Length: 269
Image 1: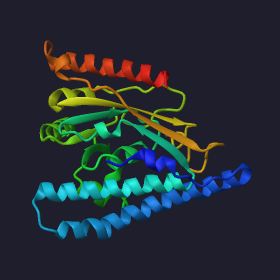
Image 2 (image 1 turned 45 degrees about the vertical axis):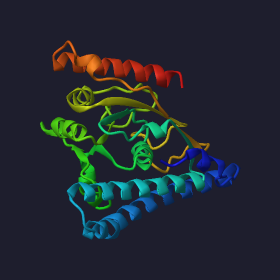
Image 3 (image 1 turned 30 degrees about the horizontal axis):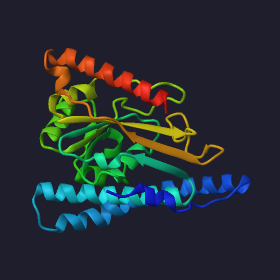
Image 4 (image 1 turned 180 degrees about the horizontal axis):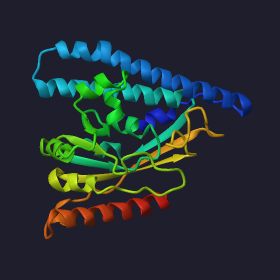
């Protein structure tokens, strides 16, 4: 696991006034270009080469996920050192355990980048459109991420990944939080957790000022540099919710618990 305290000790690009705003606009655009190029390099060069190395299916999947994680980590460092944002990740060392389901809110487009960057072999439920994007189709296929395509077997695939002792990242909102609105969780994440998770670990994410939300184009940058904070919460035992109730009732109870927890933690952050 990488030490983010060392990353934050380094000084990012520092500018002031209009030049600072212009630079951050340029650096933000460059971040998107770099991300797209990185996806193509992974798809056309890195992952095919890794696929030629000996090993079983699980080993190949792990190599792909580690490569994506390292690429995302480099991208986070590019955004940080170019002055687009600053960040703090409190408790990252507690992520990545076998059978762990990581539940996070989704205030910005880059949330999943930060999480995968710091978890070397994580699975993730991602939106279906990534399978149609030429920059991302190859990586998500080789990493065997799970498509949030609305199919009946999606929940079971996710639960199977947890029962296989994989770490799974889930955003229960299903899409980015609307600016100024509290997160609204769908019950599917709770149902997955009760079907297969050994432990549930919440991650509370704040992005101030808001950027790259569902309602904001990439070029509408805030007046000051963005600060991304990720806090890992206390583990939740799924068996405490399904010990004495059928799955539909237990899912509702867990979903309500998670919703209240995130409202409390994000309101106090």
